[in-house]
Image (cartoon, rainbow over all chains, first blue to last red; front, side, top):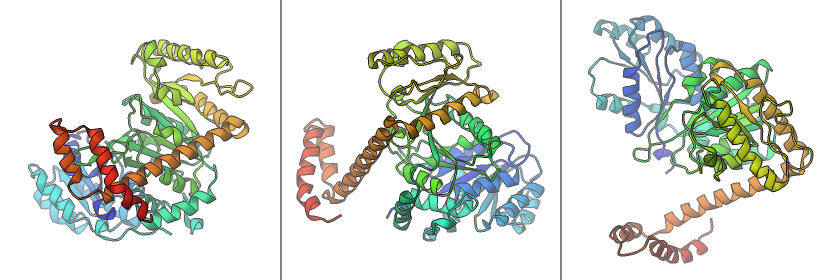
Amino acid sequence: MVLCMRPLRILIAKPGLDGHDRGAKIIARALRDAGMEVIYTGLRQTPEMIAEAALQEDVDAVGLSILSGAHNTLLPRVVEALRARGLGDIPVFAGGIIPEEDVPFLKAHGITEVFGPGTPLETIVHFIETHTPRRARPEPSAT
Amino acid sequence: MSEQLSWRAPRALARLLTAIENGAPEALAQVQTLYRQTAHRAHIVGITGVPGGGKSTLVAALTRALREQSRTVAVLSVDPSSPFTRGAILGDRIRMRGISGDPGVFIRSLASRSAPGGIAAATADMVTALDAAGFDVIFVETVGAGQDDVAIARLAETVVVVEAPGLGDDIQAIKAGLIEIADILVVNKADLPDAQRTAQNLAAALALGFETQGHHGPSLASSPQAGAPSGRAGWRVPVLLTSAAHDQGVAALIDALQQHRAWLETSEEGKHRRLRQAEAEIRARLYAQLMRAALAHIEHGALERWAAQCAQHRAHPEEAARALLQAILPKLCSSST
């Protein structure tokens, strides 16, 4: 009973150097209002910092907001850093200013979904609720 | 199995913490074993105080300083859950950016999940797991605390209450509650005007208490005896000025933490305190277990029916609670755990 009621834990991070986190905060707020526990790391995170936070916080999904244009470099590196820590099963979604033509490349490099500007918040909430496989698994006993 | 639980294996640790937080039965069984194996190994430090006082920034500054001494540090940082959606935004990592990425530092954010008192229900068990993993110092940062959020006092060995300048007069400083649980009082943001005066007010308020107990007054950071135990039974609560964002006053705070730990380990009061904490923890768990058992036995819809009566002032909530209790007492007594 306790297990099925547990809130999802989601890491929201901003990789790279752009200093605009309004979008990230709106997503964080929307996920909070959907009953999730959102770990928000703030600006200017390296892929390693993001993966380390995902590991320590044992999150169900990682959301990346990026407006700098460096998404084709940075987002695959986040996925690699997660895989290097054995966290390849955590879904990674992205948002921000990402041109449509870059989406197939990103998906080929491990990004589960990309949400462009104007995506309804319910769409993102629904996506997370239906793409968090770690939640369905029984809790590992960690022995 | 606990041999494998180590700060060097953060993933297994992170997963155990999740299982504890979610009340997984096998994790709780493991914690009980770990508890027996970890008697006062890590220094468990509570950091509490008003929202926005700089608790997270102070924890980050302390962690940096401890890492320079090659001590490993775990941080459990609690932020509030929404009472409506149960969601939460856990933002304490923002202030701890400078210390993440160091394998000797483990930071875990947790939502209060509406537990009263400023920490989450699972916090004590998560501390046990971190202790078993071998961290030297464990910081537990509470939610931004109100005057009455004193649950950290039954968990932490050393409680640091963080105040900010300009938040209240000298009467605020002698009210009961949060300030009373301080082993160390910190006035953070000491670069702001009024910091000295706030510290003086707090020191004067503490001195009143010491006078009534026949002890010497507390001392300010500027005096040479700051933080020194006052000879016999008592611990003098030092009032320290820090500016965590500028790494000022942090070394003095580290010294005070270490002095307090040493005092706990050598004084009778330290032993008594552990007894009182254990008793308070048992009471808290008894209360939680009783509530769970009671709620499980209340007839479906009975509470809601009483609520409808009480909402219209046709019944008093006390009457409702008594009636519900009367109805479940026989069931509670006959059911074995």
